[in-house]
Length: 127
Image (cartoon, rainbow, N blue to C red):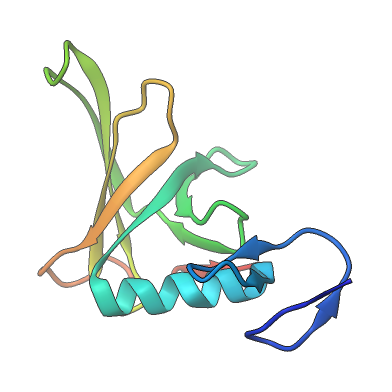
């Protein structure tokens, strides 16, 4: 049994750890990621597809998901020629966010808030 510092729940099973190595439930992971995005304007998420093939970016445990409004594939020449995917989505602050994934062997998507207005709104899904 684990007691989570943030939400005070006691649950048996999997959990994450925060920056201070305290146990955090997966729901609180989404809340912490949203706080970080709003405060810092950047975060590393994961670019994946759902069951229907729609792209989304989200946290590693899947409790935070942002639907990708549009994306672009292209090649870039850093360290040889790699495939790159640029994605855009509406973030938790209502702003448009841009993410970059160098998709060769990774799902990591480095995201940051842009200065443009959102292309769509209210597409945050928490699980």
